[in-house]
Image 1: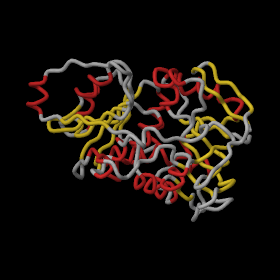
Image 2 (image 1 turned 135 degrees about the horizontal axis):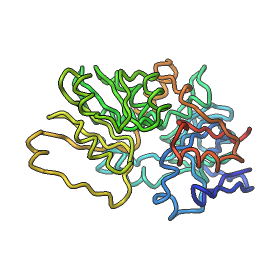
Image 3 (image 1 turned 90 degrees about the horizontal axis):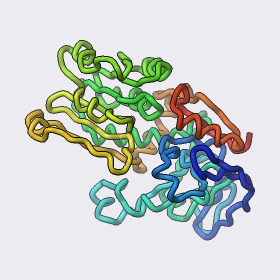
Length: 341
């Protein structure tokens, strides 16, 4: 089989490898659609483990099953989770399963930018989701990123009618724009520095979409009847974005860190002012099984038009080009790799 091996954002090499052999309780998945995630191009996060095959936003068909596997058959159309929890540690039992050490250590063999992956037994046991009729592989590959968004919105736990500002209208930010009304948002606005992404935010349902260099607090006050955003979701790790997001958060509001900051990132703040304004700062990572199932249902029901977010569809041989597109930002929103093109 062919795989795309990551060495850096500018060095992705196509190699031939043996199709992984599966053991008891495992399954072999033929990858039909694999999305490039923003985290895939974070070199500080990936380079220490390179070379490796990345890719975790996958959809495809079951090509083989190992002994002991039940409820799964060759030819089944599925989405698979690369990270799955143990379901028994104190974090899992407290409902914080995305902090579970098992979740952060489980993965595919070798990775989603390949024609086939081996799904370990633990992933088969608790990380397989059937693709409903009428949902394409491309649409289904949005399940994991949408599940992450749904978990973050749950964590925010905002009252009905709240105003939400999405800072950064890349793929994650646009999914937040689309999902916010399902969690009671009365006003949804977004910022970015790329005009095509601002246009996309408006198409996905944002009442307003402003360039991040504008007077966003002032524009927020006008749009929200004299107040700032009750919920600010930070979907970019750009320098200065945290400070700008905090300045847009209403007293008693919540700032939710969704984008992954670089290690060592710091920010000085007036803790007295933070205390006085009652600002809550929280974060979110990944999504659990319920989030994945909810994501698939929203896609199946057509409540979130994920297909409109695809800007590039590339064969496996052009995976490197896809990494450059995602790393460069710009007009690229969602880049999909199709290993059998």
